[in-house]
Length: 213
Image (cartoon, rainbow, N blue to C red; front, side):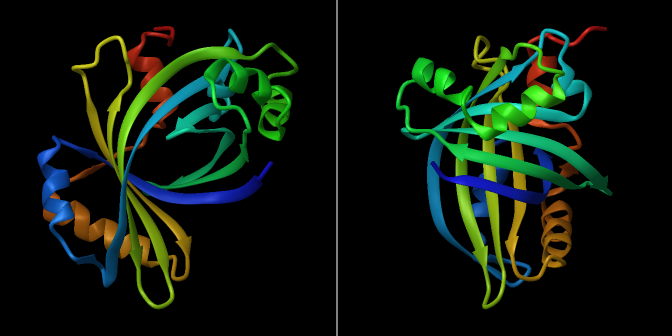
């Protein structure tokens, strides 16, 4: 078991189509940060909540993620949104299971699940929505700072696979926090990007018509 409890700091952009990803990947650096360590991975996310969506109502979420052959459980709680820069508390625990049903059972004994249950007033949590994300990861680095840039092609409703939403996530990992503002401004201006203010959980609920009108 590996447990992480961190504050996630990132900004997200909506992208008009996949051609923008191709243009971004042709760059060597952004804001003096060298692009390196490119990887591709398919991600399957399942979000759990109460029938009353108590987590969603409190700007929180409980996620079971399959990335490659590994599963992890994650609890996220929104802290603040400062002009499109998101700050969230993230509690993540790696799971030992290698199959979905086993991972779903194991999740119920994890710390992220315990925290989520407390937010839901001990109500039962069950799978609500799921998504599929084809993600390209880049590390952006200089001598003192490290960021992660993710280029995401997301199916918020897997039953309608032709509907794909393209997003960019730029996340601070260590070093100079101010570079996220510089890098995000460069990306937004060069590729005419619009900041995304909605979590993937909210977009998934909307795509699958789970929110009450």
